Image (tube, rainbow, N blue to C red):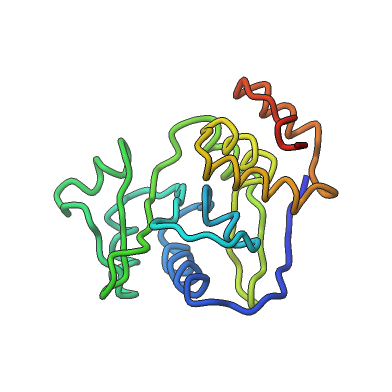
Length: 186
């Protein structure tokens, strides 16, 4: 299984914002992992997104919010409901002046979230670190979601990492999610 990736491309403004966000939360969380669309974008898929999905294991959403506030981020959720939103749904943060893209932060709530946190992949980008979901899980989950955008992300990641994928791990997630990853071969 892939454990580390070094990217030698220049940072763009979106990358810098994502790195600023994950660096801001590092002291307030036990662990985090970036999942979903930004993972494909990170590896060069030419598309946009309105949000960056982050699974974060934090003792308190308020401490997470405080760490982000110190770095200039704001919350889209009412402060009075931030703890409940974090545990039950998600909390969205943004960096003014723009509300987009924003960061959707969720507590780990299922086996996929926990596995992603426990087996996260370290990506070195511009000398900085960001942790992402394991590629095999990312691909299988994107196929499971099934929208055109998700399938295109899955295909892009599959093609990008074809030679480095743990096929057994990909098949394990495919069985767990009741999907057929052979559609990525077409």
